[in-house]
Length: 277
Image (cartoon, rainbow, N blue to C red; front, side):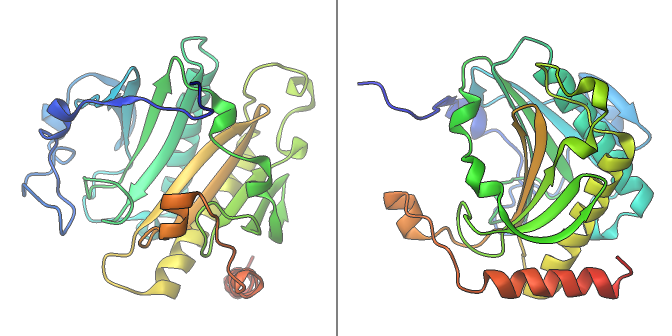
């Protein structure tokens, strides 16, 4: 019987060989991303930002890439100078769109894990790009998940608190509208490239939102994910803290909508205002 879900094989033979450096699941003290001279299959670089093929391609069939964000192993997004954060997002979006428009993949995902609850294994700041030849991109999201209470809007880049969250708590979206793109590109059938100044706003909002979440929750081993989506050719981003996933979602696909959503929108709005936004 056919099911409307995406499913790929996870090669456990490869998976058990992966190094783990995150506290709580650590199996080695040697960070594979710190030893730059030993890195193989490098695709592109921008200073300390490196894109390379993932040595542990556990999902089959797929093409997994790793984007190393910085040479500083214990940094995180709140530690980045603004210009470095912008370079990371410009670099990542460029290669994500290149993969999306290559014709080699039906779907390409671009995401970041941080912390032991995020699903990641390496502490060193990095993102991942994965091209899937067979997965249906329309099964990866519902468009209403990107709607919410508007917190900030500039150059066609809107930050909002999701009112239809995927998992539940303090979920933020960054949505790029037509105003973030050049007029000549809007009729293209490809994933569109936002104007550089709009990508810079996106990068700034990601940095500020992660910094706010980390300060607000203020707990050991704070974890979060950042997900990028191609929705009808335009970029969407979802930022969410990670805790134990609600059993109602795991077992029954029931989404929880916290009553504190307006409060979280107001708190982030106040944080941005206090920091000159």
